[in-house]
Length: 143
Image (cartoon, rainbow, N blue to C red):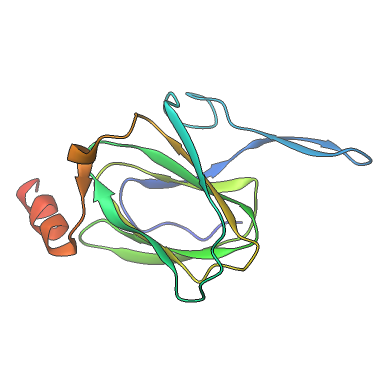
């Protein structure tokens, strides 16, 4: 059972699985079904050979995402401006939903780590909050 999430606007996502013992496993992520939004963008991160690499280090004003570790492992830090939580992702069938206004950082990648991200919208630089202090000010202004 996954660790309960204490960070607001986040949830565990379990993909539908079709297991064919001799021919492997098929995991399925459909928009507005397993993924709680229509998928507008898909990207993946790999080649994380630098031991101190960090990814993320930002939040989004409106964008929703699902983050999946489809190979290897990494740590994910989530922060909603009031609560902070660390998760260890290793299961390619289990992801984390990040709603809007979640500061996230990914780190401690295994050398074979591949991260798949499903996003609710196309890239828009204006949607990013890139400074942590700016993020805290932004979330406080919404309370």
